[in-house]
Image (cartoon, rainbow, N blue to C red; front, side):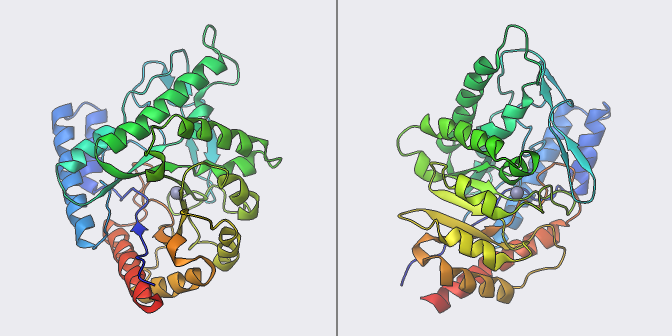
Amino acid sequence: MTSTIPTEPIGSIPRPSELLQAVRDHAVGKISLHTLEAAYDLAIEETIRQFEATGSPIITDGEQSKPSFATYPVAGGRNIVESGGLVVTFSDRHVRTFPKLTSGPFRYQQYASDYVKKARGFTSLPLKQAVISASLLSTLYPEKSIHGYSREAFTEDLIQEVAKDISGSLTAGAEVVQVDFTEAPLARKLDPSGKLLKEFVAINNEVFSRLRPGERERVGVHVCKGGDWDSTHSGEVDYAKVIPEVFELRVPRFYFAIAGEADPDRTLKLLADYVEGRRKIFVGVTDPINNEQETPEVVERRVIKAAKLIDLKNLGTTDDCGFAPFGDDTSTTRELAFAKIHARVEGTRRAERKLR
Ligand SMILES: [Zn+2]
């Protein structure tokens, strides 16, 4: 067996304190946009340099200038209010409130391709870009419909914008685009009947059906139970109630958080049922919400275990989640995040040598 086990990050790295200060200073008018942008550039360059040093074959910009994994397309939008949308409660009881649309039409303020273009200037390594799903953004539309802008009209605009976000990122030079679908387990928590999850899968498949030929092979989805301030939003949800629906998604790459599961072996067995063809299942081998640092040996053991159930040609490794998907999360240090990434890369390589 000579195949290489691909290993990919999820996306975010905690922002340096200087950058977080610059964001706060800009919000209160203490520094100019120009100064803030210089702080972003500095953080992106430094993050990419540290990412390269981990040995990771594919890297990200650490989402240093993304306001959050979910809301970057609408941040600053005229027809958006910052709260009033979906409310997500985490296991430590902190809450994240999502924005709401107040009028049509729905248009992105920012496409992820801009992040790719910026990062491209700092590295020659392959880049991965995470984008937000249509399903999460579908929650922006208020319960009470918007006069003159129906939910159907919104959904059509939304599907077009998300497809454009994915295609644009690939065109700008991303090797792989990952659609963040953390709300798959959340949908099961919010609606135990499973109807909401089915709707989420359907809207995301509609987006994938709009991609140009050849694009879909480079697209995947990330599923986790949340990772913010070292806590989850859907930790109690049984993956058995999520995984069958997720594999209805018509993309070939899947990134699952499993290292932090109480029983990762059970999840591996569930995933093994969906191994087929050229599908790649990337299993989480490091846990960003656990402050204990995995060693390469720990990762190696996890990969070898996964390889017992998932054929090597279908197996990849990843981190369970981003290390700071919301811009302000500093619960994990940058040093620990990069140490975990290094362990993932090194542990995957060691396992691969043994499995050959
Ligand atoms: Zn995640």
